Image (cartoon, rainbow, N blue to C red):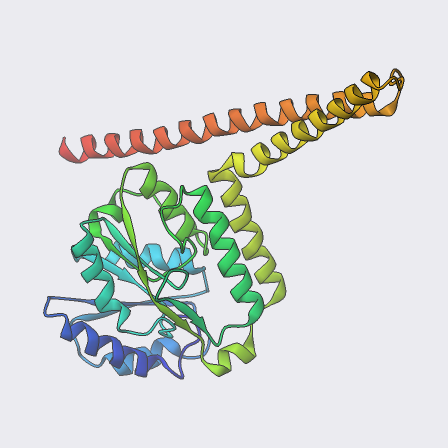
Length: 309
């Protein structure tokens, strides 16, 4: 929660109602991420004396990643669901996520508006564009294992989160979770969902500097997880251009036109050499990525041994 005092009581009521319908034991953990508008006090009043609802309250604002890590550490259940306190995904998705996780026999379920049955409603056009095409890039980098890499609304088996050494303090935590979970062999399933903004949030918008930083960090993650997306494409493109230039020079030479000393030959050689170098760099980056994934697996095995000793 961050500055949600006007709606937090309603959200708690809606969440409590859907959790009670699940027919399972449950707890609701509210994380107040340094709100400055009285959200913490409003949440306490809405909780009343309900022993199943817990409040984590701290100051100052530390970011979504830090808030999630605090909540994950507090959670005791076999399944852990995370979502925004303003319920932009609605509360019904909290029933559908664990059902899909159980039916598919996977390790975590992800709410996605980018698959059949899902959609974005009342969201500004720029945000729709960045979400749709940004997640396509991230999907390619992650090996097409999800259509929504940047979303918070998910349901995990608890052992997934316990196996991850999470570090991110901001929204990059969603990407960090996927990267490390997939490296450890955990599997996911996407669940179609509707992301709906309230009119007042659409008017409030999203600060441009923050939006640019968000897009930049996610773009960097995409290239980190899939180095061939950037370097491989650039390298192959340059080598292709060099091949075309060389072919054209050969055609001119066969036709009797002298090409010696022409800039065309220089362009051909430069494109081929730089293209090859970039491809080699992409190969090295891919090897480093695999080493990082192996390190994650080794860390998990070491942690398991320590817990057993």
